[in-house]
Image (cartoon, rainbow, N blue to C red; front, side, top):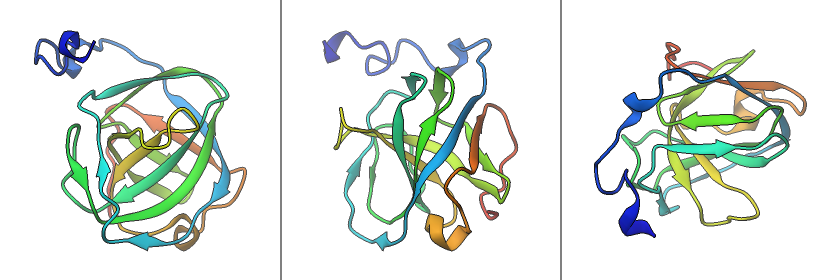
Length: 151
């Protein structure tokens, strides 16, 4: 099946998305801690379909990561429950009332089907260090200007 994937065959790119709705999630668990040797393997696909009610983990890296990369330096941010369905795309910005958490770099499937790791590029700060709280909203926005040095 992977040999037929249009992304791994370089047949399509993210410009195929003419319009998408914003995805809104709420924090269900705030995380703490960092690792320098996590060895996350981001899948080559730049998008993931998200169903309403799914719970996924947000992890941040300060590395220049994208689809298909390996990521070592990370900080744990939060588990979030998606309040609506839609399509999440690498380069979407993850925003909270505390500021920008980062820009989606890609997805690691190490714990799937339990949950997916959504890896963000941004400041290497945990959810606890960012002041996140259970119930806080996280909005994933396309084309949003995200200062990765905030939040």
